[in-house]
Length: 202
Image: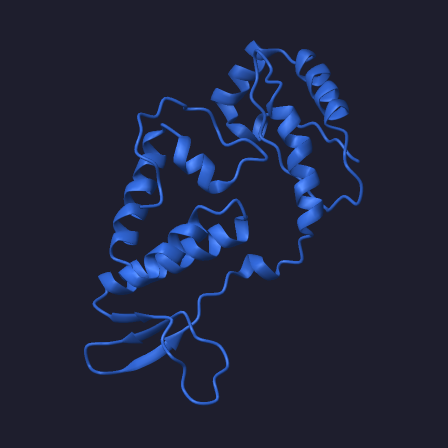
């Protein structure tokens, strides 16, 4: 099965450079445990001769591999629960160059090929730029503030490495200038929309 069997004690949030699989495998949070249990059950119903491949892709440090494999497992499980019968990577019909992900058969005999494609694979993001952003945010993650937790959103794609040291310094200077007690009241009264925002550019 894809996830390791050990006692988990790490409740910390996902770190910026951390892969999805690594986070799901280490997190002790109850909601993450439910995701692991679902994936375990779904993979156990995946055809045995295809299981090693799907597990290897789920365990990949490559996010596209992980997301595409997760999507295939989710589709397979959903269609099984709806009463369909599935053949994984069936031999294509004459003239079809690529083996599709699934041949799906309904109880009435209707059948169709299904190819699982992630929209995110074609979203135009530059993998090198995303890696540079993750490294920078990872350095910020590694230096937590004593009183605040940040929600970080990034836009654009850098062509050179942003300075994690500069971002961390600016973020801590900004956080040190905030009044935690006042923000606590604002949070209770108005929700997250009332929280201040720091814009940092590279």
